[in-house]
Length: 283
Image (cartoon, rainbow, N blue to C red; front, side):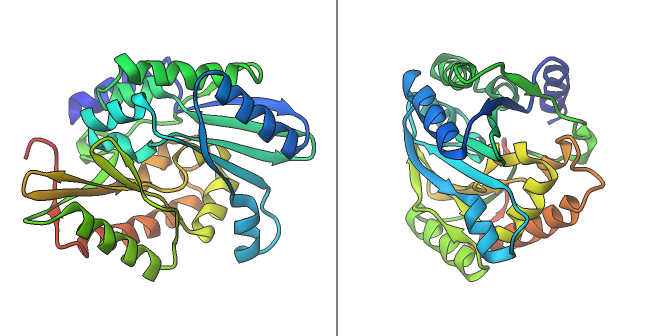
């Protein structure tokens, strides 16, 4: 793990955590341009989520327009998840659109950094990264948003929380996770298969409000990802590590930190409800 974060620290000097571009026009115009740009590079939208309206309905006014374009899994996503299931924390990729008036920010994750960190970069994964960059490049000048800080290797933090459920079937574990998420007040999209991994995408409006008012570019990881994969007779089940978002600019020492801590507590309880035990790669 020390080697992994050493690699991240080196990559973080030159790469970004998120890729963003400013686009002029109404929300509808920017959304149409974004979908057209994605299609032009061979990426297809599975759905567009009106997160802004959803959050305002639950938490009240004062939240900006926010759309999430969830892409259909393609060869790059499948290859990444097949090489390292932790890649499912951002798969299938999401492109966010946020802003107001006639000025919007469109962005996604920087695959060079994240896929490099997870040691899956290359082949179809690299081509997926190029396609995402190319789509944004069709909209304007792409800027990289670098991490404000890097995790302490001594902390042992990984990009994902993971548990191993003994003698289980992935379908049963997915059902438990989805039931627990619903019981905890999270909205769910239908789960999706990305290679050998089943990805579950929940969202909680209260968490989204705090996170994206603090750092809009955090939308590359939204909706939140849980994942499950058959691993021999057992099931590997996991979720994105919420505290990973604290390395983004403006997040540390903000109201987002207590929210992320709360999210981590809830997500850990949901993973524990599967009957699994904590898991680290190599065990």
